Amino acid sequence: MKTGRVVMLVLGTLAALLGLGLLAGAAGVGWLNFQQRDEGYFTSSLERFEASSNAITSVGLDIMAGGRLPDVIPSDSAGSILLRGASATAGKDIFIGIAPQQDVARYLDGVRHSEIRELELRPFRVEYRDVPGIRTPARPSAQNFWAASAAGAGTQELRWDLRPGSWAIVVMNADASAPVAADLQGGIRSDLLWPLFLALLIGGLVLLAIGVPLIVAGAMGLGRQRPLPERPTAGPAAALTGTAATLGGAGPVAGGTPSPAAVGLFSNSPYPAHLSGQLDPAVSRWMWLVKWLLAIPHIIVLFFLWFALIVTSIVAWFAILFTARYPQSLFNFNVGVLRWSWRVSFYAFSALGTDRYPPFTLARTDYPADFDVDYPEHLSRGLVLVKSWLLAIPHLLIVGVLAGSSRVWVAAEDEFAGGAARYAAGGGLSLIALLVLIAGAILLFTGRYLRSLFDLLLGLNRWVYRVTAYVALMRDEYPPFRLDLGPADPGQNQPLNQPKGQS
Image (cartoon, rainbow, N blue to C red; front, side, top):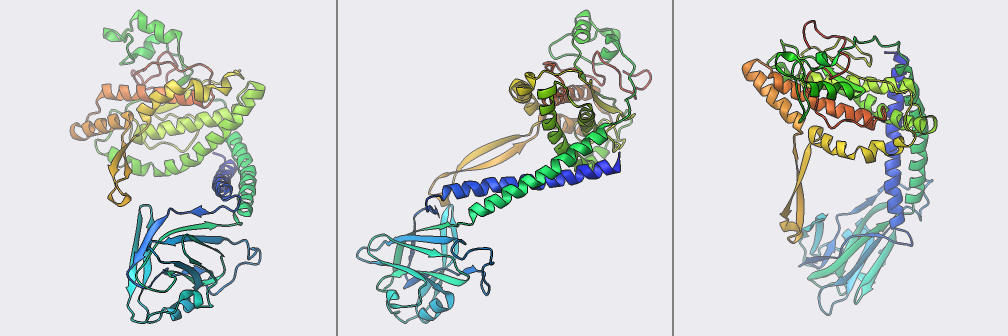
């Protein structure tokens, strides 16, 4: 492959991924900023805090302790906190205050108080560290070191703008008596969310504006390859030799000659996306156990290639919409990515059909697994609007069963959440993964790959890749609801590496 184009693809992918990350962050920050509009705060639920001591205090609120806010951040915009609460003891007034930590320490020196050591909001749980003492403190409202405070009967509310330093929050009875019980709610807001949203949005758009053209240019360069060698045309009988069949349709009769119904079915409706794979008769009985590890370099490369395929498919969507043509260099690149993916899957994940290590190339080779799509000279402008999502839904549901892993959510009662339900997720294997595991186990213990199982796996993968080509906008022909079994794509050309005498 061309080194310069590969570098462009990698740098473009990294830039685009970072740009998407910044845009995702901008979306989250924008939502938060919208939620706190009109002087709103993000607030917790109202919870009960109680202790047998004279005061409840926080561990400490450190805000750039020993430093100062950057000059670019206005001191009145860093943020503010809200504390709202009422005494839970009848006849008692509440006091809520915020002060420098050292002043609070001097005020409560020798006074029994409870320091919050751990606080969880969902489910709510609080743990205190009891600090012993025998001294009775003075009334808190009489002290002059509070940065902000609120005291009185009923619900009291305190708002305080964040400032650098080490701060402590104190909750007491207004008369400084023990015990303390209060229903409290906290909140926070920041005016920095809007400028942060703008910075993330602009940064994300700039990185996408850099990354997407690099990806497209790299993909187009890699897609400008010399014409592919033609495969010899195979007739219907050759394509159907072996175990090629259809789901619920007629298959070959004895002696390898297909039935007329099968010939008509395959020869009259070949799909222009061709997947093939030849089983290595000498495949190792144990090597499949480590192929996933050996395939890691390919997985890393395919991560970049698949991200590029998504980007180039979006570009192709616009090209088809306005010109009714799929740019051929992008088409060649995307087909190459699918071809590369199929080789790696055939080797390590979806078939285990060979021990030969896949080549690092988008082009067709003599590897025993191949995938190709006929280039369309014209594509429908109307279909491009709906085929990859709406029309493909029936096939996507089937592909989800064949290649997608399942997840199950189980509801269980959570004792820490007052009996509320919590959900635990569990995963499962796809049908293809399960069949590959069965094939590997048979191979491990018998030294033989069950040929009928291999043919079934090829048919399942063929269905998946046909749908993938359709969703990737490469063809307008709707994929058939047909399970074509066997190593060769029925009714189509034979792969380049077809061994003599084998079909």
